[in-house]
Length: 100
Image (cartoon, rainbow, N blue to C red; front, side):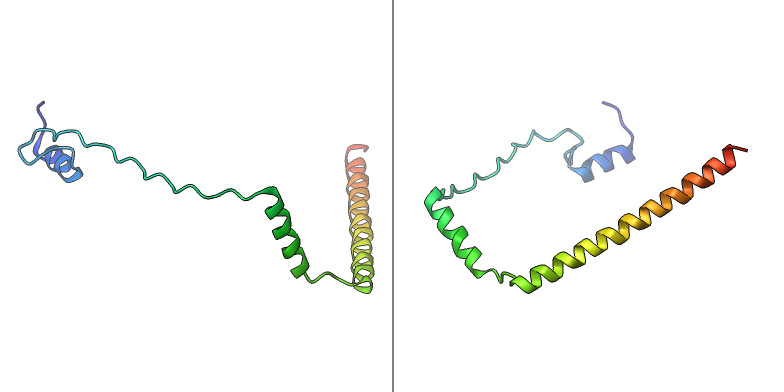
């Protein structure tokens, strides 16, 4: 195959040509090493570990739950009112523009 010096140099740099200008013998593909097989846990062990983790959780007490619930509900009311007002104003504006 005829090719110029620049192409030969580039292919040699990339390892696609040998020093003599011929293509090198094909490389063998390296197979990935298999991962060691891990032991599967039993369902009973999984449940035990899950319960142990849940015991470590700092659960909120009743006053905190009430306080957080009130905050969530108040935020929902404020955002719902804001979106309703925005929708109302935009709808009136569009009707005013196109109803003329």
